Amino acid sequence: MIDDLFAREAGDVQWLAPGVCLLPGYLLPELEPLLDALREVLAAAPLRRVNTPSGQPLSVAMSNCGALGWVSTAQGYCYVREDPQSGQPWPALPPLLQRLSWQAAQRAGFADFAADACLINRYRPGARMGLHQDRDEADFRQPIVSFSLGLPATFLLGGLQRRDRVQRLRLQHGDALVWGGPARLRYHGILPLEAGEHPRMGAQRINLTLRRAAP
Ligand code: MD6
Ligand code: FE
Image (cartoon, rainbow, N blue to C red):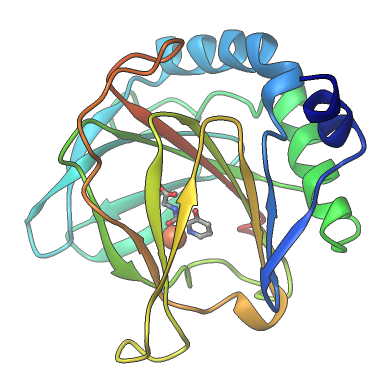
């Protein structure tokens, strides 16, 4: 246990592929303040089910915080300043999330990451995310920082072409994944969440993806 904590404080970094860096348990030392901040954000901008531009319901419920929020509209995917559900600006990015994402990027070798958008995804058992690329941001030199909370999930790490071979990676409660450089446009997804009950988070997985959306 002591070794385990020490490894975390020392900043465990695992390179899984060029540009893909896992920080196991990264969030755990600041978990409770992070959950407090998340609760406040979701009170102002509740999670909601959205449809793809073609009208298919996504199995994941979503919300956002930060200056920009990622939304799906009949015209396609884009970043917008206001929550379409309330007509109000998205809740501000909590300073703790700003710092945690900056620091995770720094540890992975990306200096000066300044997130302006945080997409919040909630998976219940059975929910999944099909293979996709993240390509709605202005500058692909900026990485994406992804935080996982609650039930474990299997992350699919594909290549730059949809048909490329897919590797599997397990994401656990408290993990950070930094994704950038040569990996920035790799296809990826999440397998259907297995049923379970997480001791702190219940029967769900929450993923926060922090991005620099504007130039
Ligand atoms: C998820 N994540 O982990 C979905 N995208 O639930 C993503 O789609 C994602 O984790 C880009 C970079 C990291 C990610
Ligand atoms: Fe993605």
